[in-house]
Image 1 (cartoon, rainbow, N blue to C red):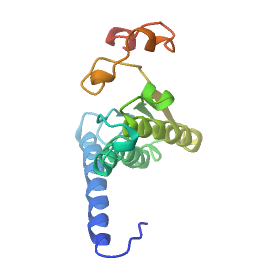
Image 2: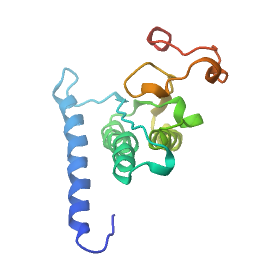
Image 3: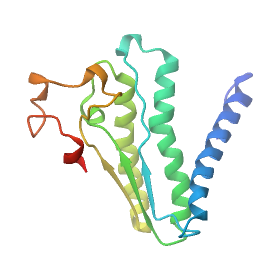
Image 4: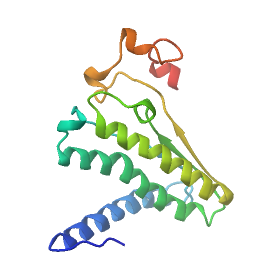
Length: 173
């Protein structure tokens, strides 16, 4: 339960409730499909980033990235597990990032959010594994996307990549 002082209390509580309703509504859409009533797999793939060094990352940008990449995943996972427990199990797959393992120049909030996902996924896997709910993360490495932008590694910045090059979508799929 959240506790805040002052006028922000109602606003924060409203945002939390609104975001929870959105997560439950998205999951509710699965209940009307061919496997009505079952949620067997959840794929969490949301991700946004910004280009800011740690020292000058605006608070608003930081919070939006953490809310989307980490908190949004948490909300979807916890909503899904409530459907998966009574049916005897399921699978949750979270798309992480190499940035969460190593950090990335100019993408502090993104790297922090993806590092947070590592802890979230490991904890959920331990807690929900005995309930036959598998929780796994895939960290596909650098992909040439809008999020990567000019942070995309080249040349000597590829020393820590096992392949010695960035992967491509065919490698990942």
